[in-house]
Image 1 (cartoon, rainbow, N blue to C red):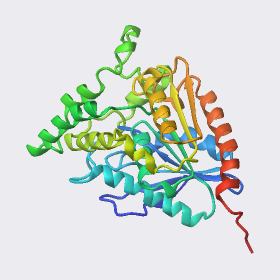
Image 2 (image 1 turned 180 degrees about the vertical axis):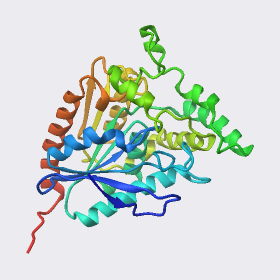
Image 3 (image 1 turned 120 degrees about the vertical axis):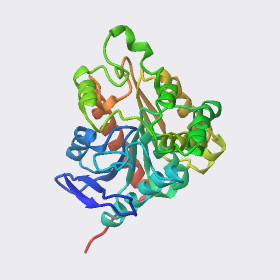
Length: 317
């Protein structure tokens, strides 16, 4: 693994991690990690993709990772916009360094929400969209989370963590698994060792600030406006990959709803992979090997078709 300097304005030093294949890369894959975690948790996934010939890049979103000055905080104003802008800056840098390669954006959980927003704002800026652990959040639900966050921010408490909003947003996630008598985050995976790694990681599981929640729910609210899906290219290949018992994905129902919305908007290449019994983090699940293989096979097949349709051959010399 190597790294690049972060290619955009950043309030504290960050870098972009790169996992390069042994030979010429078949495509670029930009990873967008989830809430209250960090890009270091994606080394196994990135390694598997690199072994399959993909150039993989990823970085810590604002408010995440060891370098974050205030975990769970993006910025004073326009935090969600800043996260999407960072994705665009990094993708453009990858495009300039490796011109002509198909561009894949792979987002997990909160990172999938950012990836969905990126696709709406920059449809020219990607060729394939992969969404892991995503879900559907209707307008009323988004506003229910946004209101208390905005109130706290108005009271000058935007940089304070909010246990109340955290409980409001996530308390239901672990309910289906409480009978196991395990941890408060068993909803993440059936792999107990991976759950324990998450609990032991000082850069995972932190509380978001009220400002961070404000930005998150603002972003989700924007995604609830389905007329915006008209901006997506009709031929954009999309893969939704999720555990069948992922509460973020509504135990599969929310994932199916996102697929239905994309198809209703005219997208002709929407695929869904639901894994029975699996939970939120498919790339940390007991059957993650199956998820890795399915993802790589789908990418290889899809990118072959995409490259023929949308990319001229790169001629050197």
